[in-house]
Length: 543
Image (cartoon, rainbow, N blue to C red):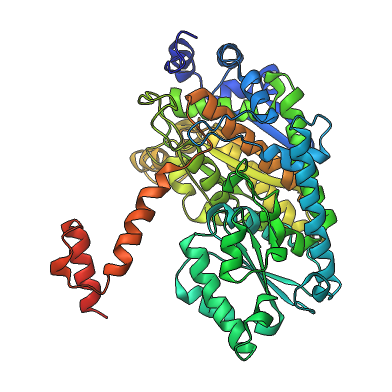
């Protein structure tokens, strides 16, 4: 490579050739299909409906090899400080290295992580036995409330909801994230303050939303104990790197589990940030979640590029974004339990890859992350799939399904799977005008042709299918880790830092200035722009 900030190749010759090659034709090539399918433990990936032929795939693969991505990958796993803007290692993979066949993280890091897992397991097991008092907490916990935002919420929320079939009986899980007081108010009305355990998750223990909601719950629990703050403190755990701040807030140090600078929030569900997961499903199954992620890690470390799941996912994303200029991607799980996956991926991908400057300075000339959005199928088919099939913009999709459901309703599951397969096929194959015309049996020739035009589907719309054997802690861990490694590779290809998030800071700083100004005389608020001042004036006038 001539420059560390050079643009991606255009792959123009391949793109031009494929522009006149329909997916109907590409799917007829079985050898090509084999090249675009692979297995990663319990997850089967089928990218055969992407607009790539073997020549294009090999061209991108050859370019990828020239970027020395394996060396960059190995640097991450070994703990080198690849997060250059914050001078930090990126070691979320170390959180599950105890389950790996190829551990690369420094031994002292792995030992510290294992010690934390054992400590967390001791607490979780005590609560499950109804003996929280043996670890400084309340006995007979019935409800666990995780209070956090962003990575302190989305990953644990996804896992807890996805693994509902494995939940420990008698212990309910809840999540509180936004500062909208209605959510906190509604949740408290469902709970017994004397049987509620609260987990406050904040790396710095300065997160506004978390501390505000935590304060609401603290006041509520203190009232239930007739003002006894010492008794109320037994209702709280914290996960933070700032033990002093947690103690000052009211959580004893013995009830604070660590976070580390080498793990970013959106990569942290594998750590004590996932305590709510462990409370929900038990520590053994939490370790199964780690084992599934470690299986994907080992695959990423050892598989050749052309059968490497994260590599193929990254190639498809780069092709759609940079060669075909697609601006968004829809994620549609045909699994109700994965309802939170699109939201989780929004943060994982858009916070990681929503960058426009190289770490060494200079504007990124290539387009970076597309907008990630989606919802569960089949519901989505009755909402926005019309636009995906016949709209003017082509939106690549990812379908996620499971082979074996946890329930015995075989007809329901067969209908669900048939819809997933049908949508992927319909988007790719479409329906020609002649096929539509043959179906139009009534009316004049002019009417038949007009109707046939409306019922024509261009097809040629790309998608990927990820099929899990079943939805278990292991398969969920592998699925999430696949996406993590795809994000790493795209950051490498686009030459951006996928592990910082300066873009969230500016709005937070302005919010801290606006908050004390909401009750001030608008005419004195010269530090704000006119639109902000007028909105403050409107808010005040309508209170």
